[in-house]
Length: 584
Image 1 (cartoon, rainbow, N blue to C red):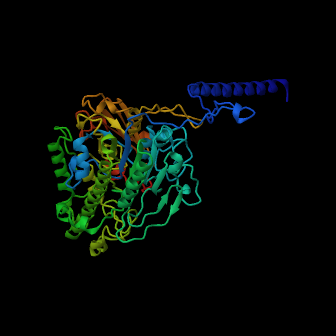
Image 2: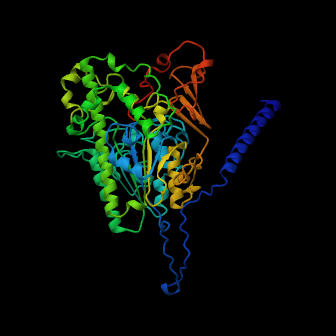
Image 3: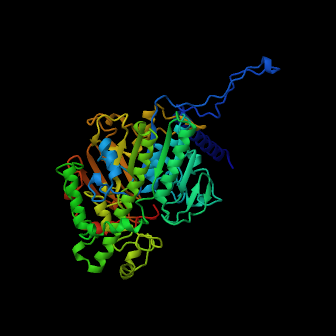
């Protein structure tokens, strides 16, 4: 090797080292505000030769600020914007309605269109890509934004409250760990107790049978309950009441955080027969009529603006009038079961509220009730009978066994067109970046702190809930948590909306993305890019809506400049069920 070649290699090495050093310096500079440290137990006493010349210094136990409210998150699953009675549904939800009547009903609240991302954003106050939960938690896909786990750089609300004097309890659905971690031999690092909960009772995956759930308690799996009349929704409320009751007995002055994540109304739609029978006659008119009626009721309730239009039926969803008599009978009972499931869930929420009142806790308990995404379209036009996904039961077989639907032995999931009724007055459904996928109910109750109940119209996102809780509790989000520098919280407190209907929006911009399809909201405008997996992003079709004036995204202002050719059906498959794993 001659001297010239050596010089070139030397220069390359120097340049590489310089670039690496500059990158490291830049990274260090970006992290300077965070002082990541280890355990902070610095002994402030003195240790002498004997006890007589030593000075003890007891550990300081964190105390919540006096008057701090209790916090309850109630998260519904696959419950669309129009599924609650106070949002226009014909189903009975009197206990939820009462919370809305005495508190706040938001009509511009946004989720992440699918469960794991919404749950990660809810618990951390950050966007899904930021915390490693871009899509379902089922596996690590090899990139920081899709690990299937919440990064340690984003402490959960349970962790933050726990270290600031709150007791923390949770029940229901988790779905924030990969499948490999769900078994008895799996890592517990991202199970609820390691994410800040003192106690937990529920299931880890995306869904479970309501009669025979796969359960775990704290850090161990437990046997499936085997008793007559068992239902998971009732069980988790029983467990919630037990946790809160024991808490009040042991530490009545200490505030608590209770996370109630129902399996309902996600499939399988399972509920005792009496709830289903009650609604059969109601849904015999079909999904087109129900969607129209919900829209009309929303206008009457002023839940939606008076100038809102109802978009046409989604491409690929059949007209009710086109169905056979047998098909109508089958599909009617599916929605009857769903409505009964919703009413049954409302009753369980009523039990929780009643208990809080009995224990004189309700006045200073802030309840946030919301859904993780819109109505679920994954079962397509036929629906699922024996199982939610990939069911091969024919419509004739469903008709012959219709009396079994929703009872033990069946795991129903309703037809896609019912999902369209679930999200009225919007287009599309869960999985989509349109409002049918991302806009869901949100109700806040806090008798002690809300003096001006009513409708709230501010644009808010699920990332705003946890920052609001920290605001109410007088807690600052930590820059470092257990030795890990923290990603800044991206949500904003919506406390200002509690007693000021004209309070400004917490932000003017927000994005949404799932499996390549995405949208961005900015100052009343919303652009939506629909991506079909396996195609070039350069070929994506973009839509534009002025949502301040067009609440239901019914008028695509970008269509005038779009080349002719290609329908919604050919672009996105008429329903989005092909957009990935359906275990959400």
